[in-house]
Each structure stands twice: as structure tokens, then as C-alpha cells.
Amino acid sequence: MNSLPIIDISPLYDDEPDAWQAVAEQIDRACRQWGFFYIKGHPISPARIAEVLGNAQRFFALPVEEKLKIDITQTRHHRGYGAVATEQLDPTKPSDLKETFDMGLHLPADHPEVLAEKPLRGPNRHPDLSGWEALMEQHYRDMQALAQTLLRAMTLALGIERDFFDTRFNEPVSVLRLIHYPPRDTASSAEQQGAGAHTDYGCITLLYQDAAGGLQVRNVNGQWIDAPPIEGTFVVNLGDMMARWSNDRYLSTPHRVISPLGVDRYSMPFFAEPHPDTLIQCLPGCQDDTHPPKYPTTTCAEFLLSRFADTYAYRREPQPA
Ligand SMILES: O=C(O)CCC(=O)C(=O)O
Ligand SMILES: [Fe+2]
Image (cartoon, rainbow, N blue to C red; front, side):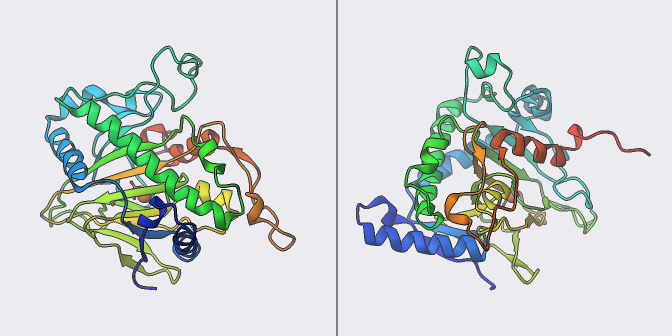
């Protein structure tokens, strides 16, 4: 259990049922044993990745007062720029040494869910950079489509109809995030991490990481192993909502990012989540007499909001001194 599986998903784009089945079995095994795997053979081009990465570098290089014009802490629907130390993924460690940009499904101000002030719903807040918005909105749609292809492959082992997730991922609350990890200097505490140990909250995460390295995943024996950058791949992992939905058939595995020494690191996770009103209740194929449902039914929005409150220092109640 020392290196994550690498799965070639290109057969999912053919109409060959046997090949599709073979990939679905590999994904199911990886989800049960690791909750983490790499995918290659996906349709996101290297040119696209380079363009989005270029946007990340342009944006994070702006003066902080420029970035704070779209400060995420000033929105109720969680869009925009998160400055360094906004998040503390591991509450036993210093705040994370990273800055972020978050976007979601763009819903205009006159959309009924926005007018009703539904949590997590609203317009995106993009920086004023040439070519930024069209590229990022397209990339969001393409990442969503890729996530749904993987979810479709999972339906086989989960004992649900092929379009089960597709019908629930209409107007999703998925988030595309850009992250910049500034270099840690040698004088800073060894406790300082880029991203503290955590599990993801949602369904499925697709992560692009640049060449800097630093991502680590905890294996079933409790050891931290490196998940090094592999060109042309995404690292895929499941979050707590999928663990719960699958009655813990699928693992939501702790991971962290060691702050880079002397180099900047950029990464781009896409957190794929269903429509906010989706019921998260034990999937039919994940329960039987010996495995009754472990968790009460919740909704996607209710579950995500409870986890957000754990992560954002600014959303917590002040602690007594
Ligand atoms: O930047 C990375 O490599 C991982 C980030 C991560 O785990 C997260 O944002 O949930
Ligand atoms: Fe994560």
C-alpha cells in the first residue's frame, strides 16, 4: 500500500461495454481500498491546463488589495479570493499557508434560488483580467463533465441506475478552486503546512497539481505517503459525502500538503457536488441485512454547510482567551 493506482479512463469515452466495465471495476477497487487514485486518458488537454495555470499565476501575482476586491469572506455564497490564513484545515496546526480563488456554477442575481438567498447560490466573482472569465467558465463545465463520467462509471458497483448521478448533478454546487502555496521559509515552524490534514467534504475531487510536489495521503496503515505529480493526470479522491452516501463502502481519506521550501506551488482542485437539495441517503446497493444504513438522511447543502463551518476560522465562534 505505498503507491496510488493509476487508471486509464480512455475506454469510458468509447462505446465498448466490456472495456467500460473493466475501468469501472478498477475505479471501484481504488475507491474501496484507497479513496484515492490517479486518472490518465481524460479529455482535458495539456494546453487547457497550461492556460488555466497561467491564469492562476497572473491572478495570485496581483497586489493583495486588488485580490481583496473579490474577498470570499465578504460573500454569503462563497465565491472569490481567500487570503493566506483564511482556512485552517487541521485545527491543531497553524492556519494554512495558501491563498485561493473559488468559483462555482454562475447563477444570475434574478435566478429564483438567488432571490430566495439559498446558501452557496449566486453569481461568480471574477477578477478583471483579460480572457479570464470565458476560459474559467468553460473549464468549470469541462471539469464537471469529467467528474460525471467518473460517477457514471461508479454506478455499476454501487448498484444504481447508470444516470443516477446525472439526474442529481443538475445545477450542481461544484467548486473550481485555484490554490497558490507560497514558499515556506526555513525559519518558519515545522508545524506550518500548506494544507493541514483533512478529508474533503463532498462527493468527488479532481485535482491538478503542478510539478512542485508536497501532496501526501494517509494509507490504511496510518502512514503518510507521497502522491507525487504525474504529468497528464488528475489525482481523484472521494469526500465525506460520498463515504456517507455509500455507507462507507467508499473511503474519504485524509490528505495534506507540505508547504514547499523555496518554490511556489499551484494546484487546482475541482470539487464535484450535486444539486444542493439532493438527498444523501444510503444508496440501495450499499445496504443489506449485515450492512444496515449507518447515517441519517441529510441534504447536500446541509452537509456541506456544516463542514464549511469547521474549516473557516472567520466563520467560527470566537474562542475564549
Ligand atoms: O493542493 C493540493 O494538492 C490539495 C488541496 C486539497 O486537498 C484541498 O483543497 O482539499
Ligand atoms: Fe483536500
